Image (cartoon, rainbow, N blue to C red):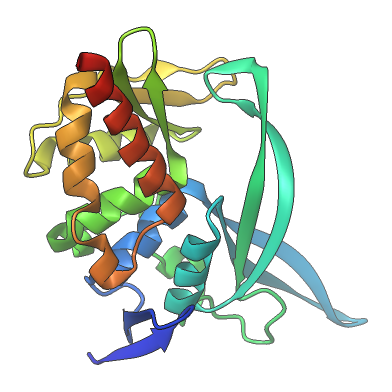
Length: 248
């Protein structure tokens, strides 16, 4: 397996393996994002009047432009930008507006392959649709970073002067797998129980006292690879600084 260097913006280059399923920091970060905020879209495309064939493409959504460019450098595809409003997962009475970047991979291509695989079933999922992360076990930091940026929330809790990190998703099995990854990471990261959200999904939180050490570990060294969303890192760092000031 050989790596190639693909430029994103400016002087940043991302090392990318030739196999999108190979264990590698870039693929771990990419599939973390896919698991957290991606979906396989199936559509019918008319080839001729007498023939229809099904095409599949992958869509990954992020609120950070740099991260979208990095994901495109890893897997190819086109990026669409729009502003969207959505209900807050924990409280549907709150609506937030934010930039949204959607990376579409394989859309409009004549090939029936997706990332070099014949169907979505060849991607890192098992027969029940659950993601298989074993290939990325040596790159848990990048995998968890992708998951946090894909389906995680970061907030400063003014009532307690602490930082909150939560993972929110409609797929309970994905959050259970994320809890297992957190249990195995090299810094002590206790988490709460899985609970239902008001919107019908699921969520769990990292223990507030563990967030500063976990967050520092999660983004340590990320600038050397470029595999991160700068806006999410800034929010986490600002929140931790607020918590430190609160203690003083």
